[in-house]
Image 1 (cartoon, rainbow, N blue to C red):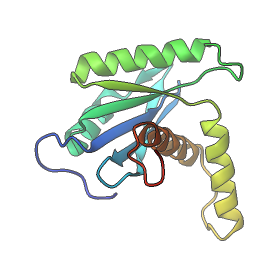
Image 2 (image 1 turned 90 degrees about the horizontal axis):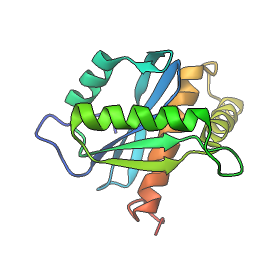
Image 3 (image 1 turned 120 degrees about the vertical axis):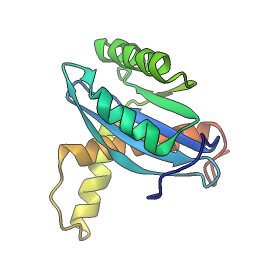
Image 4 (image 1 turned 135 degrees about the horizontal axis):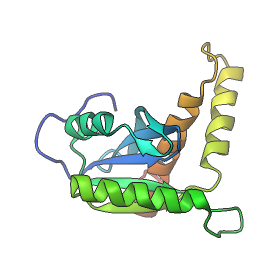
Length: 156
């Protein structure tokens, strides 16, 4: 998934976001392929995203939909970060006029860090960076959305 789309919006391209107050992990997913990969990490200041960076990503990938991870508490209740992620999603929808999907992202950052640590233990040469975790969490959010729509191989 390293080739960006250069034509008009394709219905099979989705951007997924792992929202954070300092960094926002971004993944790109293809519904046709049922796969997701890292698209980068954007800086944020006090929850305010790098809008110029987002503009570039949206122009590059031309997604048909945006998927936002909602960080619920372990018991399923909403937290202050859930509200911030909802505001981020609403701002994306308003700015880009694209449909949104929401995904419960409980434990994605923990799962992402664990997966990356396992990769490192099995030969990954580069040290683990916070940006890597944010990107991997965004990939997990995209994969969760693909599964929920029956578009991931083996995920009905």
